[in-house]
Image (tube, rainbow, N blue to C red; front, side, top):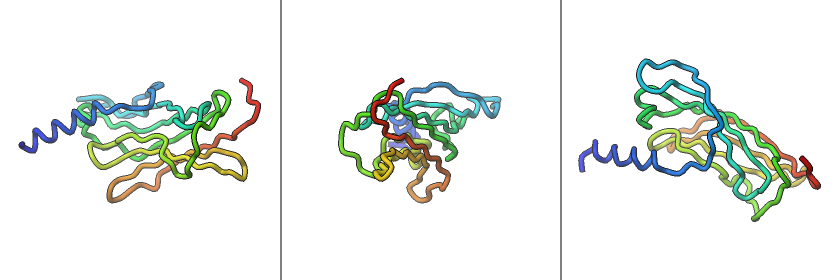
Length: 154
């Protein structure tokens, strides 16, 4: 198989991979003459083990020709805000540092991840978003916390 065929196959698999986040909206940050504009995308995802918690991510998305084809590498810029949206119910035991969300931000080597910690002393869930690469990650990160409130009402 030729290199171009392998690259095409990998691109199709990456584009067809399921995403566990719902896009809420986006804004353009850089105009591109050809291809999509660079954007900041806002996405929401629910914690898979904690009912009643939703996290909102804002992240950079590279446009241009490479971005339109899904082969651009997004920057490591991201922010997170997690909120209680209903009664909190922990459905399974929680492990500190457990990945609750993961999204590829380049074709092969870079990933945006959200991990969860449980501050048991304060009964708070702490969510950390960061970007990593196989060889060299980024220190850019953002954190959000949700208190586990008893008797929550909207």
